[in-house]
Image (tube, rainbow over the protein chains, first blue to last red):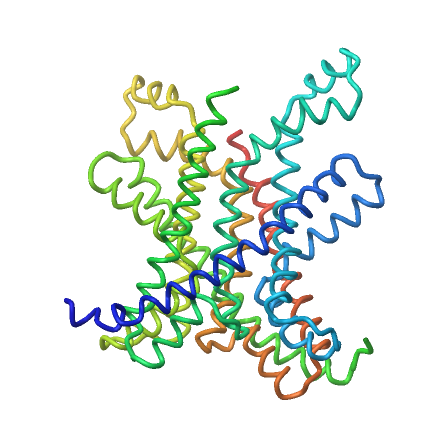
Length: 218
Length: 217
């Protein structure tokens, strides 16, 4: 048993460094994706008709094209455009734009699932729109949106594995390098899967905790 | 960016050949997952060790990347003696991963049917099989169609990852053409459009089946 997993025991530190890079990449993408997703959700709920239809086109395109196509596109395109952007940031830009579309749907659903009566009640109390949004709508919408938001984050962490196909170094790439050296794909990829699982399952448990809390009420 | 139409005219047939494999993979995965996911969901809603295993399976596949699962199957199994082809490894990984998601969709559907309907069925003396096939599942089907449509779209997109284990589906064909021609814009524009068409067809099929099968509501 020890002997079978010797390649993994020798190289786990390299995998951990790869996992660090995965977390860094996911972290760097999730922040702009969330901000942009929130802004897009606001455009969807309050925006003018032209802005909303532009948003629909954006959502249609992003939801219909695989992330891998966009990542590969940027990988081949960036050198051609002369934009001097390191590949890491190219990936972060693509992942942010891609996940912002899904985030916006989650936030929009959170806002729209609040009953109309809440808006009416707040207005009849004479609240300004700003106050209404700040103390009535957003806190509840965010509470509702939190669990699906967390499961999107899990997806985002998993999606960072795709950048290994376009040659960036993170956990999946690190495990592929070790496999090329040790010729022990089963053990090494299982090890990598275990690390991914620890990251994602922690997030998923947190999502479940938020879900249970949001069911309890306020 | 100027488009080279002569190039695109030569490119499209090659891409469509790849798209055929993409569609094959997506349809096979979706059909297998519809059955497999239901089995997992039913196992999870049962009592005993089977429920525990099904729950563990769902957590494991949902929290690890498809790409890693594909590598384990493709490279790992060839190491220990019974290697699978790229297509089969990809198909297997796609089914294993998406089966977890489909099972969760079914579970949501099963839970949304009120407990009283089970009780009412039993009070009428229905057998378990009759209860499920004539009362519970028709309602579940109607409720799971919208999320299933999303899953079908996501499966179609996921098939692009099979390119990583050298299956000549559309993404891999595109990469080969980019590397041999350097017409990056043309290739990616065409690939993106074809994927958009495929996912739109999946979405439209979902809408249609919603209209046909939503009788139970």
